[in-house]
Length: 92
Image 1 (cartoon, rainbow, N blue to C red):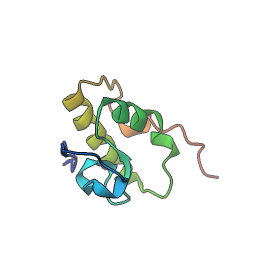
Image 2 (cartoon, one colour):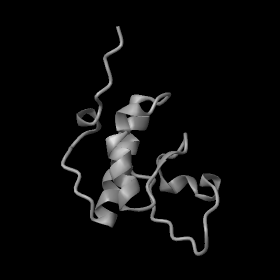
Image 3 (cartoon, rainbow, N blue to C red):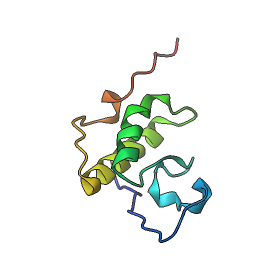
């Protein structure tokens, strides 16, 4: 899957999340889970299953973006698919 994540280095103080481009988010369309440093990458992995209102395709893209950001920031992500991060209860 083609990723959309790109590292973003902005000089100065970011005052709001709206200052960030879509390309720094795991879920760029929804602007959820910013991946701006190693800690944010770890948080995105930990909270992956808590993101609501996204499709399976969105999750696949987010996982690819997380993997790319993790490699950039030197974060170990051992999962090989987004389904391994998905701990949500199945819908009945």
